[in-house]
Length: 226
Image: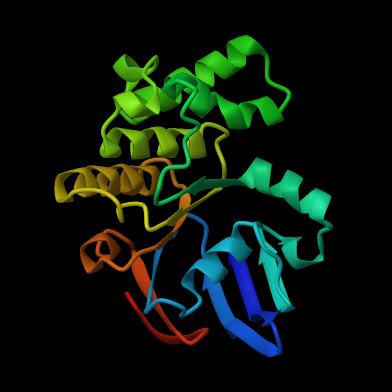
């Protein structure tokens, strides 16, 4: 059984008198430990699909099962609990809290769980070490480069040891060198730690790091290649 199963997955919403359907009857299977890149033009449904799988949004129709859980059937509260336990999200613009240090930003998701202070410290220290920022733990976002900020964001995404990591244009705001370093880190998370990783990108060089690429156009799967 696939780890992630999408069957006739549809997302629609109204804008005035117009019905917008960014995702329409999409079928997709993702195995545990896969690294999937989502590509396509703006408005093709990439981020919509990412947000549905991440539990940030809910489908209008269709089925979405992850690890055997019927995500589409969960209440808003239970969906939030599921998301906190199972998903780490990496944003294009980092979404770090400017008044918190790197350490404190990474620690934030752990405050939603019943961890002791010692356990939180152990987890944050391990995440900082993994992204190579142990010596920057007490720096604020304004004291870090863009690449370092994104590595802090990745550490925050993995500190709860989620099964799924979703990344929305994780290199979109970075120079080529920083982008390569971030992609190398995401690849390590997938290949060495076995994280299931889904990434939206417009950059073919970034997509080349994935195990496979899925192309969307107008809410539909139009091409899939190894």
